[in-house]
Image 1 (spheres, protein in one colour):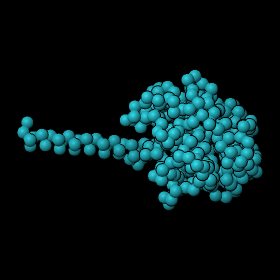
Image 2 (cartoon, helix red, strand yellow):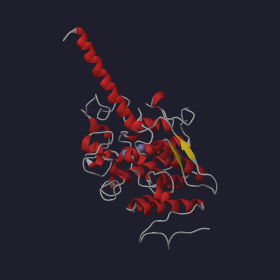
Image 3 (cartoon, helix red, strand yellow):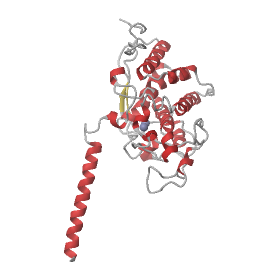
Length: 326
Ligand SMILES: [Zn+2]
Ligand SMILES: [Zn+2]
């Protein structure tokens, strides 16, 4: 081939590559192309709650634990709403205090953005509870020893140590490695979120939950993202009522809830070694609607909130049982 032919060939090839890349970006980010649920599959659906589809663990459970840990109801609501906003970018909770619902916006933590692995697929040191499951390690960096450094999904922990510990150092304003300025969560106006605020605590407890809900995939595949196979890496892991994180993965979910509790208590300067019974009761409910309803009813009875409860179909449904008001 002549020099000119090679050049033309190269130009065609790079134009093709750019085209494919653009197409991929379009498919991934195009407005409305990928419904939120497809990349997320949270258990608390709009049909159940009337809110944007979300996770009963990150919102409904966390705000009850925050109340029990000693936060007031405004702070507890903000912690829960912020926790969910880490996934959705923006989240609005239930109608609150008989008036407007709380909305929290969090930027720079998107799962598909540059900090997705930091906030949603963080690894932990042994300062956190080890999961009672086959192959589980206390320091979850160990799954990635010898991992391929060229791929962010498989690379070992860096010299800064496990990501969850870094997020804690930021959220609690502790000494030690923290996320860089480019990695910090930001508010709606683009300003870094301040540590030691309810929103910062909400972000940290979200990352605690995710470090456990994505751990089975780390054990099975030494992988820090979602992919279809193995099932522990599939997004369905979060919601599947038979082989997901509320059944076969319950050991992970339980340790996660215990650590969320411990973090909330620690922030309050209180002993977090004794998780409340609420955790056990909440995790024992395998039906998503009944689980959400239980947490909402608990929150409402602890706060005197009068937002109408959740109504679930079926025998465990609420037509007879729910507190109907107004
Ligand atoms: Zn997440
Ligand atoms: Zn996930």
